Image 1 (cartoon, rainbow, N blue to C red):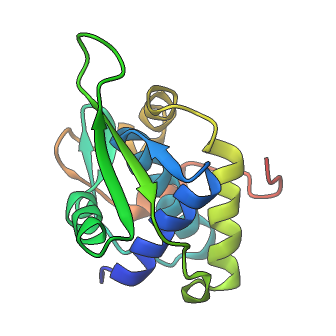
Image 2 (cartoon, one colour):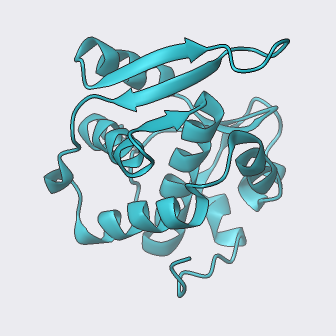
Length: 164
């Protein structure tokens, strides 16, 4: 499995651009990428970002996410801010896109999957997305801190007919 770095970066920019120019929370960004990757693999038997996922206590997390978003911040395509939204809670990472995504890097099926994930999950917060991923076979069938194998996506039975 190869990490598709450019596609990964553009997917993050695309998600941000379609969600009001920002994604609030690393958890939300991680889960949206999980749905892009695992739904795409389940439907097309192909990798989208090519990242590996680990089963962490708050759900699936892409292994390369921090590295990719840091690179994007250096390239001035993404701004990452820590915002204290609630007393007593960790600051929220807010990811703001500074450039428009290059949609030419995506195939038509990849664009459809990005739009589907945005339509289906884009309005949910990190906690709601965490609860959804916890209920899924790829996460529930993997030991904590272990790699989540893409093949487990086939045990989800996702309905790809509706776009909502």
